[in-house]
View 1 (cartoon, rainbow, N blue to C red):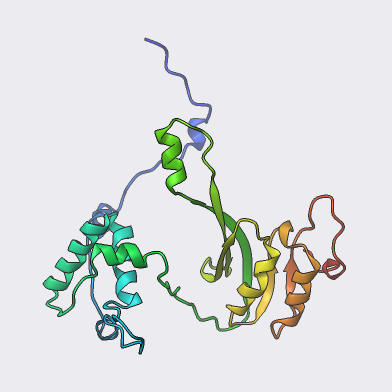
View 2: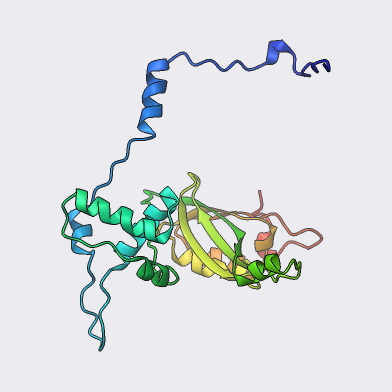
Length: 244
């Protein structure tokens, strides 16, 4: 039997994890399995959309109903058919005269449903932090590459530009193609922010003259801009004295 290697960390500096509040710890574990679902009066009334005034068939379910079903699907990792049955059972248990969207409707409207992000009210000026991340698009190309043992599958990406406050809450977001640069999304992100901006933080990709000009026009307070210059590039004229 091989000898056990001793850890490099001295025993004096090892962190000891001991649960001392067993009653609160067990209560917290039980609360993880506690599920509470309710529908407000506004949600019940908005479950069926009003007549849109167009000719032909009218939609049977509003965006709220579709988003509710898709949210339950993501939380409990359910396929579309199981999502339809799960939501239908919830409505039946709560004795609501509502019908769950069928799986065909969920599959069709999942592509273009409008998801409203909850907003957070700010009393004063906020610190806006902007960055972007890539989202991989999975499609039939990867399936064909796996099926035919090929490595020439064309990968598709989209870019999600997000603006958060200093507490980590999302206040602005925009989904663009991978070919668009980050500074071009700043006007759309600033339009979604209702509160004045006291500080704007981003990486070197936003070190352009257009970004500094836009930030100089918005807000009612003096904005502090924290954008490090790009590597090998000379800082813009507007960036002088504003990078900290």
